[in-house]
Image (cartoon, rainbow, N blue to C red):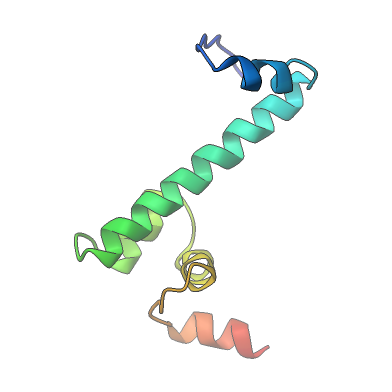
Length: 90
């Protein structure tokens, strides 16, 4: 994997907390945070009627089945496809 450098200014309390963690931990933290943010924004656009559920899944970078689960976990009633329903019943 190609790497780069990012410099950010953070509140001191966060700097202290992150100072003792490994590079792998920080990378994982950023990946998870960015994924969660993409999902949240995609679900917001879907809920507002701005995009279809399929488009929201594509924007979030997840399958429609995964987005359905994530939407349900956030209290939304996602549309269920035949594929999602079959997976849930098995």
